[in-house]
Image (tube, rainbow, N blue to C red; front, side, top):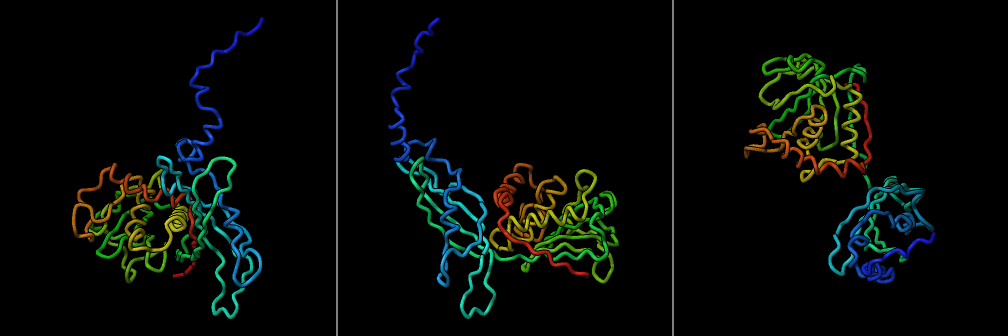
Length: 309
C-alpha cells in the first residue's frame, strides 16, 4: 500500500526558511525577535578586566535575571537587559585606603538576535553593598509561635508587630506585656523582642491600623526572620522613592495575614493616618506587583547582626 502524496498548502511554501531568517534578522518576525528569554552576555560580564592587574577580576558570575528593556517595533529588534552577580577574585588596588569590595552586579544590554550571530553586549559594573539586618531576640527561641500580626503606623514610621497571643486578645486599649516587631530603618532592617518602652508593655492604640490572625494557626519567629531577610535581599536598602518602612511593613503584614496591604496615604493626605477606607483586594494586588520581580531575583546581600538587647 502506498500512501497518497500529502497535500501541502501553498501558504506553507510561501515563507521559506531563508525568508523567515531574513525577516527575523530585520526584526519583522515578532515571535522570534520580541522575546528576551535567554542569557547571552555572561561571557562578556565574566571577562571584565582590571586596570591594575592582568586578566579578569571575577572568580565567577551567577545569573540574575533577563528581561525586555525596550520592546520590538516594526523593523526594530527588542533590546534585552541581563544582570549577573560576580565575586571578586583578587584585585588589589595600589595604596587603597579601604579593603576592595568583593561583590558586583553587571548589568548588560544587547539587541535581540536570532540564531547564528553573536550578540553585542554592553555591560556596566556596580557594587552590591551589604545591608545590615539587626536581629535581637533576647533569650526567646526561634521556634516561638506567633499568632497575631498588626500593622502600626505613626507620622514618620511603620512597623509590623507580632504577638504570641490570639487575635481576640490583641484589641484596642489592651496592653500586652511583650512582643516582637520587624521594621526598616535608614540603616537597615530589624527584628526585635521587646517589653515596650520602660518595660511598660505594648499598648494597642489608634496607631495600630489593623491586626489579624497569622495564617495557618501561626508562624515561628524563625519564619518571620527569614521573611524579612527575603524582603531585604529582594528590595535592598531603604530608599525614599521605592523602598520605605511603609512598603516593608505592608508586604510583611500581607504575607503573614493574607489580608490587603495597608497602602500609604490612601484616603487622606495625612500619611500618618491609617488607610481609610481600607484598600480593596484589586488595589492591594496592584500595589504588590512592584515586589514580584525583585523578590524572584533577590539581588542584595543582607548581613544578620545579632544583638542581645
